Length: 110
Image 1 (cartoon, rainbow, N blue to C red):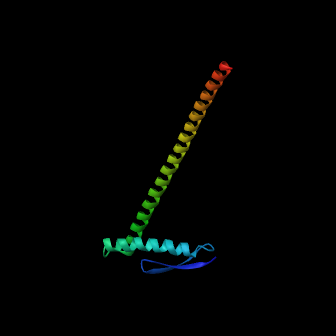
Image 2: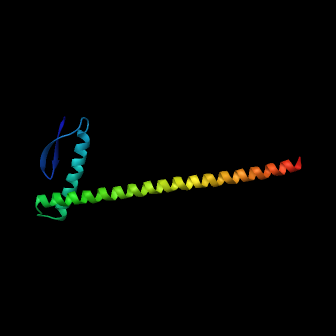
Image 3: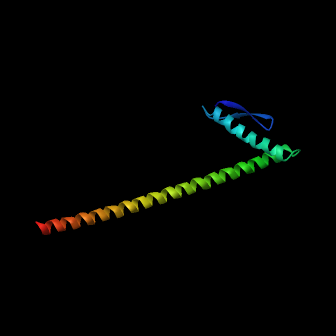
């Protein structure tokens, strides 16, 4: 299993990761480090562990919001699909009704 070296809050950590995941782990670590850096500016002098806890909470909040947005999108997609199916059925019924009506008129005229 490959290992990757990451840097968060001016500390280096050696982590094992899946094959081919090294770049992704580095990217995620940089994102977390960015959160800690932002917090350090907002809370000068705060202990590192407190910054890490706050960063974890911010990331958890982002994750929760993203899951909520994804769920809303899925609900909207399902609703749109249902609406499209309802509309398609209504159009099909209307077309069938018009064709039947025209057929009856044509039968009566012949």
